[in-house]
Every structure is written in structure tokens, then in C-alpha cells.
Length: 143
Image 1 (cartoon, rainbow, N blue to C red):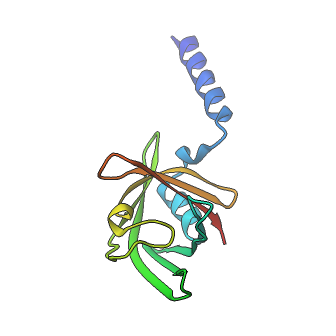
Image 2 (cartoon, rainbow, N blue to C red; image 1 turned 120 degrees about the horizontal axis):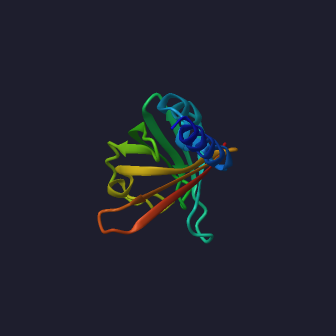
């Protein structure tokens, strides 16, 4: 029985050390500290120059940007991080704006649970499913 336990422990250690992205093993506190920065969103379409910066701090998100006419805008919402054993999530909520942001997002699309796909080396990649079953994603680079 002891040998079986040692074998299982060894296999688990090899599996976990072989994972390239160990964000799944981070606590909510560590994930939250990694996300609390200002990020520039990378537009999903190369033809759109989304000049948006997203600032995550203490449970609040502020989106600042400039639209195609040069007008500045700022939208605010909230977020919280939830770390499970196999996945980590960011819950975004409280965005209430009527227009579509230059990055292509509406408030109803933003207000949901987003899976943290990557959060490392100055890159944050979030993915979620909207109300119509469409997979949405957001990619950011650290500013």
C-alpha cells in the first residue's frame, strides 16, 4: 500500500512539474495580485485599432480609451477572482453602457464569468461563453 502511495505521489509530481502554465495552482490572492495592473487590450480584428487600457485594482475595472473620432471615454465595472482546483476565473460585472466599445465589446458581453487561460509574462488571455453560446476571448498585454 505504501509503494502504491509513493508511486501515485511521484506520478502526480511529474505531471504537475510538467505543466507549462501553473496558474491553476495559484491561490486567488496570487492571481489577484498578478491581474492588478493596467493592460492594453489587443483587438480581435487587425483592422480595428482599439486604443483601450483596462485597469484592474481592488475589485474595480476601469476601461479608458479613445474612439475613432478621437473622443475619450471611461467605463467602470467590478471584478473578482475565483480559483478552483482545475480552473481559475475572473467574474466581471456592473458594466452598464449602451454603446459598443471600439474593441467590439458590449456591457452585456463583458458581464460574465471569464476563464483565465493565460496570465503570465505580461500577457493575459481570458475566454468566456456569451448568452448565445458564442465563445468570446480577450487578449491583453501589460502596459
